[in-house]
Length: 478
Ligand SMILES: *Cc1c(COP(=O)(O)O)cnc(C)c1O
Image (cartoon, rainbow, N blue to C red; front, side, top):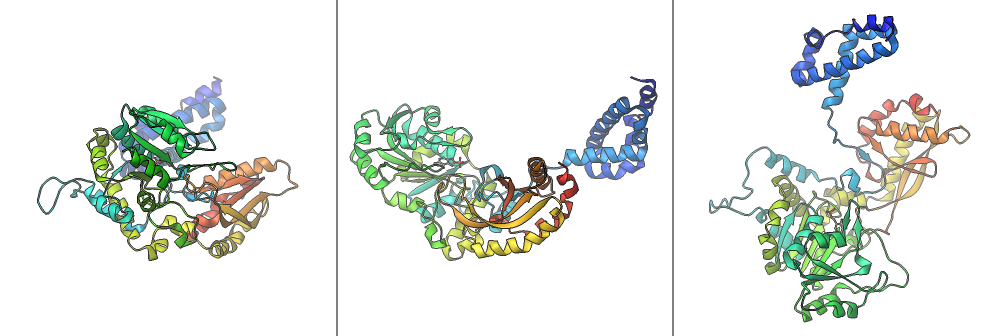
């Protein structure tokens, strides 16, 4: 340390003195003494480092005002929630990393209502006796799927695990090699089978599986027959798969249950809203499946949950599994899911009221209009560094629903000026500047441009209000 640095160190105030500064009182009132003290320690350590590095040159930083400002910055960083809303302009509507389905207001209000205090979660108000938390959902699920019974767990991965563990423990489960899926986040069918305590019997080949393959695999050790929706890929070309009706007949003949993991799963035909067909839970049960499992927050458009619906005797066995207790949903999930299921009772207005479906079915002219309004808003501030153009693009449904179908959409393409050297660096800074906004904007980088797919942009006012903060000067520095 230089003499100047040593002298400068003496200028660092103590935490005790700083914490008594009048200017810190408002911060302490809002955030509490503990938070502000922790922030003060961090701020003073930083200051000490600056003085050691820069000597007297950093002395300005040791004044009370500068110290208070530094502490305020630390407090702000400490108390900012790490989980916060973003604009999902990636073009993937049900984006797993961005929280999947946006909830309808009805669900949000229902969550708030039960979150506040006590509720009849497991209490029968008519008899005054203990109730079952499934009661709030089961009749709706049965009505909407045609199932005899239904139960709900934390997510579809849990639904599959619990179903297999309840119905096939220490027994064999034949599954087509073409359906040995891996969903993101280490959900792999062979591993799930192992953890569920059952033995996977692979049948058929990657591209072709026939009924005889299943028939040949069924023996005394077989617990059930399983079919899994290949939700995030498609096998194309010379292919064959056994559809549910045929497989159900075989399972029935052998006295076995057919379990179908639908992945996304839907409750109403999507064609009705101009979207590609996705098998509905009701359709698959009607075709002879004994149990279907599907997610609450994929196409269904609700909260994270796993729904298990089908034959009453099988659902009863699943409910009795002690593991069910470890996977049960909380009151907020139940409130949200029940509110979403109620919206399904009126399919005519569903596309208006259910945000996930509204975004998926959004007319392309609508998205085009958003693009026309927003292009000048972005083009102005970014004029020096990038060209902003309206381009057509393709959105995806996401979350492994209809993996090969694309929805025509419209995007703003933000492309760093071509002639400029270091266009790649400019692009990186731009995407980072968008991510640093109060409500971060997440797009996708494609062919040297930042693409903002506007399908999922509904709150234009908030988007526009923060564009002034983009600091294009910063973004432009290559
Ligand atoms: C998404 C998916 C799962 C896992 O569902 P989560 O709700 O994410 O747990 C399981 N199986 C299939 C076929 C899926 O598509």
